[in-house]
Image (tube, rainbow, N blue to C red; front, side):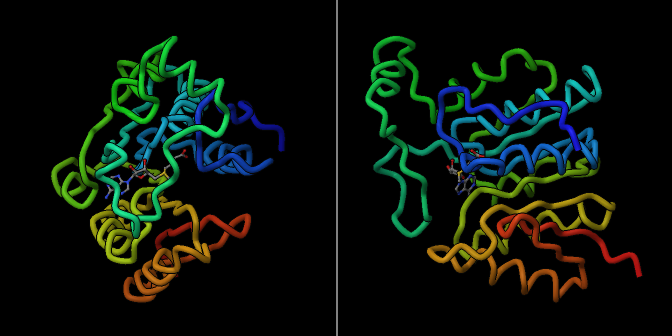
Length: 215
Ligand SMILES: C[S@@+](CC[C@H](N)C(=O)[O-])C[C@H]1O[C@@H](n2cnc3c(N)ncnc32)[C@H](O)[C@@H]1O
């Protein structure tokens, strides 16, 4: 399958950095063609930007993208949240963000800047998914990329809050299923699908796709 958009890194950090993983992810979205996308855990906003580029190429202006992230400072991040390293290993990137554009890439301002082309379509929310998911409307959400907190309790709580999306025939795609250093992700997903009798498909040995059981 030829995909409309190739995954780009926008000179930032992203979860989907391994060769082929970003393109696989975009091809999955391209098949589903969601119109109301939710990403939990947006970090530098690279995946968010790629998703908006793709949805724009499919639907023109007729799509919505919501992103939620804690946007913590380094000192606020607890060790057991399996938090990605904020700093760049490439010193040129550090200099670029610190002295040239003077923007911390892991911040709501920087993500909004990266997504400014889609200003009318996006809603970027700073906060904890455990709380925000109870406050926003999930009625029209048809695709969730769950890549926020990786602790068992956080993943389970997010999944429980997203039950309506699956019940409405939407999809939840979880990243990092079966990650050795974050076993809580798999544990929460396995328990959740069993409890709700949802379908679970593992894709590319890392994504867990959760859908409603049609039988
Ligand atoms: C692995 S990164 C996300 C990477 C991003 N999806 C990408 O593709 O590049 C995880 C993000 O989840 C956020 N996060 C962790 N726990 C969270 C929570 N409870 N609510 C909202 N965001 C959370 C962190 O701040 C971090 O930016």
